[in-house]
Amino acid sequence: MSEYILSKSTYIRGLQCHKSLYLNKFRPYLRDKITEEQLAKFARGHAVGKVAQQLFPGGVAMSRPGKPSAEKTAQLICEGFPVIYEACFISDGVIVALDILVKQENGYNAYEVKSSLALSNVYYNDAYLQYYVLNAAGFRPEKFFLIHRNAEIELTESGDLHEMFVFTDVTAECKTNELFVQEGISQMLEVMKRDKSPDIQTGKQCMYPYPCDFRGVCWKKISKAEQEELLG
Ligand code: SF4
Image 1 (tube, rainbow, N blue to C red):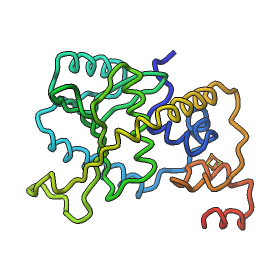
Image 2 (cartoon, helix red, strand yellow):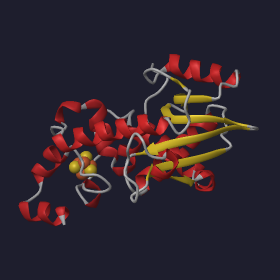
Image 3 (cartoon, helix red, strand yellow):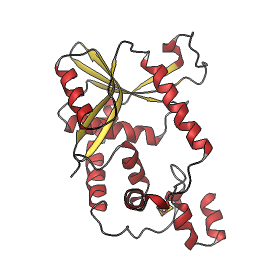
Image 4 (cartoon, rainbow, N blue to C red):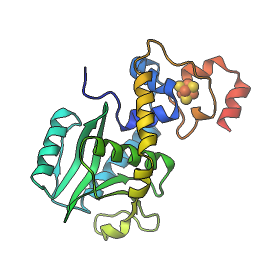
């Protein structure tokens, strides 16, 4: 069996809907087609993440998330390497790749970069999960920061990087939510053991926090009027 079953994206999917989590794993061919807009968003996120690495230059980047990257990350931490990009951790059946890990006097600070102009609940949940997995893997960061773009400053190659991004220390919230994450993971791992998808009715969760990409299947069973109501 693989060392992990959930990732950041599947955990966030599972928080939205357990049925979506199940279908994504066992019936991926039922997913709606990915849109150009979504592809552009992924590319934007990747590009902003690369720029943000320069806030802490000179780091070493882990390759694809997986056991070799997790082992390499652990080794670099042990050696006190100053900056690690895409630092990988596996614990409790979950794999995460943290954007940037930076050595401090007494440990490491963790940084997760978001390409958006503001923080949302999803980003906080992402941070809570990562903080939990890092700790469960035996590594407690000193502080955990979410970084997002400063809406008032344009992202350019020549500007002051520290003005282009906003840092939010979410360590205290991460600590408060450790039990919430633990319970969420445990429920999701149970869902993944099922031999059929959970019987979950369509509802507000189909559009929040993201429009679900299994609406093509689930919404077939509801009327146009109900669909319009869910679309708000
Ligand atoms: S469409 Fe709604 S009910 Fe169906 S998997 Fe997605 S969120 Fe769940």
